[in-house]
Image 1 (cartoon, rainbow, N blue to C red):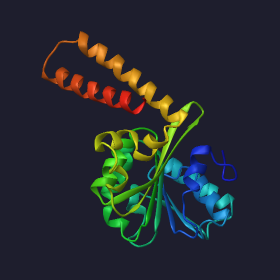
Image 2: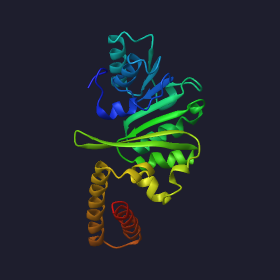
Image 3: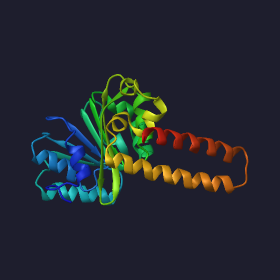
Image 4: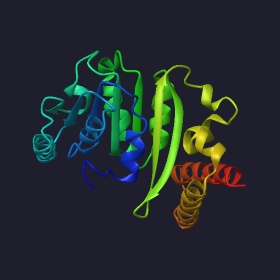
Length: 236
């Protein structure tokens, strides 16, 4: 992967960045995504944010090597600390866990003024991102699921709006866990993902049944049984 040829998951993220957006890519790593969309003319400029020194230097070197220092500002900082309120209108966060993405957004709420779109690609724990969006007034507009190098990824696109709208025709708990749009499409990759998850839950449930029974194991067992039942319903 490089700035000319993105991975499939980053290409999917790039495809959801609005034309002409003022972009901040948080956790930009080598800054391949902002370099790619600037060179394609999708955005006039971008901010590439990194919290760790190594990735920050890699992003800086990449932007310099592409002669894009006038268009892309590489900044070191924690999450949304790298932007000012009103500075961008689209934020991308890709390649992290859902809980971390949610924490970054929550910690940086004051920086979301003027932001119209979030394009989020959690590696795991998409439910945490959906929960955060609902709690904070963001409406899920689109979801994608894809498989690359043996791993399954989800892309969530959200805009300010009616956060419960995509979930109206579905059980809310199931919608948050599986994704309201993905549930409707039931692609082969979606079915593969949740069959794997269901088997994993069943394995853990079997282990719990053999464990010492107390209030904690009883609570975990009920939660797993509920998830397994939801998965069976969704996979019908």
